[in-house]
Amino acid sequence: MEMGVRDQPRLAWLLLTFSLPTKRASQRVEVWRKLQRYGTVPLGNSGYLLPRNPMNEERFQWLATSIRKYGGDASIVHVQGIDNISAPQMIGRFAEARAQEYQELIRQVQEFFDTPRAKQAVGRLSRLRSCFQEIVEVDFFESPLQKRVEELLAKADAARLTTHMAETRKINSKDYKNRVWVTRPRPGVDRCASAWLIRRFIDSKAQFAFAPEEQVPRDSVPFDMFHERGFGHRGDDCTFETLQNDFRIRDRRVKAIGEIIHDADLADDKFGRKEGYGIDEVLKGWARQKISDQDLLDRGMQLIEGIYHAPS
Image (cartoon, rainbow, N blue to C red; front, side, top):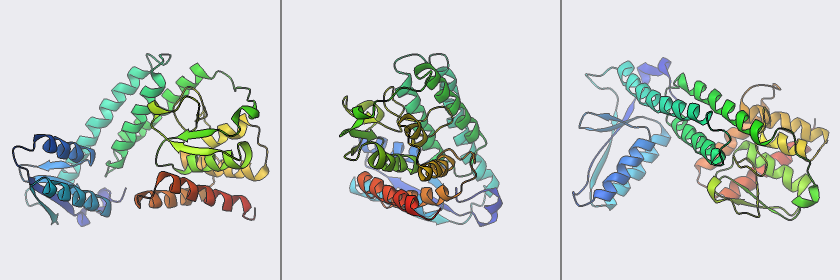
């Protein structure tokens, strides 16, 4: 997050004001949903506020362009201060909005623990994680509830894995040759590293594809997805480590990379390896450039290949 309470004296805001023709009911709903997803807070009847940063400014610019395309009017105003609302009060409004969202998510995760064996549990947990990531993205002032939800999701994942994977499966590596490996869109550090591991040590002719959890092709191999089949987080292991263990990859350099990816993906500092945080930031930077999922995966795999050949 780019701003915190200590930055209050320097806080600046973006205010989006707009109007749409009354006949544009569906577009009005579309704009409202985007404002919700962006984490805005209304300023009376004047418009919608966000902390000023490049990402929020870009989002408001895109939204303003859409509103004008629908025949409406839209303006983006840079606000340095609001005379009747102090910076702490405005931060409090954002904090309250995120707290409500986190509390609702906590309620849903707690419900999940009552039905971890249900067939729909995998998809349900995936949706909860996606919802959590959406809230985190607009949690501009880092609510203390964020960590609480993260811990609950980790426990829910462990409960699911205990149910479906009581012990490590015996893998026949021949069953995983010349396959299509599927993961979620916008791959991050664990998925890029896992794809590199698959291509280099498991399936040299592997093809990679991207799909939502509920649309994974039947004959494909899911990875880093909350799916009953395939390979993902298991216990305290990230997906890279699960693949490494299941396919019994004993390469010394792979072990080191596994430690790096674990610390970057789970952020628990288990191995004290900081290198992965840089990789993670590079991947996030590329992702913001809106390059394709395949290009993002390829670049990430190249980064891992470079680490593999780096002096130990």
